[in-house]
Image (cartoon, rainbow, N blue to C red; front, side, top):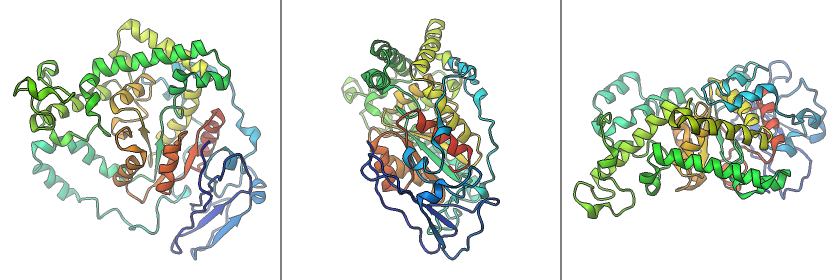
Length: 447
């Protein structure tokens, strides 16, 4: 379904300890990719490798014979290569346990109680090398000093106030080692295939029930997007990121601002209704657009752990029932994905980033309704509707830098191609087993 290149990426001679794991397995895929990945040798299970660019080419037979305690590296990515290092019997998908029942609530603790307790994340030095030796050895060139940062804030004009939050996160971003780029639909959640009935066909479910659940969730998504997130105004003014128009925000207090009477129109015909409306793309129009995205951010941050606050009591109960029903229909797909998301979130030097082909505002509503607001801060959500995933990846690399390691997780060919373009390892999600394998790799600190 998702062909990958068959080339092994060979690091430059200057790179430190490298292990390359290849496999001789063949699958139905045209040309599975095997990525070489830099790794620091394990302190207990792997002997030290000299820094003279020694590369060990390990055949699949040798890999499969490694004991459960010997894992000096891992093979990226997917079920076919992954099973070369792990017995397939260890990845059995089990039914929903009692602890999974907590996924039906909407509170902030919906999934936090399921935080994995199997292992404590290893120190950064024992995980994969986060850097590319061919790049600059330091981020100091792009990180301003504290004095310079304070001076720039004092001189900041009102027009640029909206950028402060993004700038404030730069120091935290510089400490990252690994960024996980997630697709949303059919990777973390099951949604589109509910609407089309393809999920029911693939897994032998009742198509009437499955499609009905998908349509009900779609209705709720647009209800939240239209009622609370200005989607009627912003549908034709879609952005890649919530901060994309923040530079047009003059910082005006919006406590008593009337969005319904400010004359804004996102349809492009607003300029004919009077000068108060403003011409689309003009200064006044852009300012009102920025106000709306600022308000969207405020609403998201306020309700990211309690989306029920945006709904009536009846709709809140309906959402609880719907999410529980979808979780049963999908055999705890979301609950399984959340185990990996929460494990990554628990690491101080790792971050989850979401890139979806859904428009930004409906995507935000979808994240809230599926209970993922605590997993993905709004600044870590990107919409690829306008520019495509490859361009989104470029923006993310520009934000976090080239010294961190990126891992792409998804089900679609667009993110697979984008990952190849940027030499990022790609973990394909096509079934429950892929999600279980991903969690195992994270628990064993291979990702």
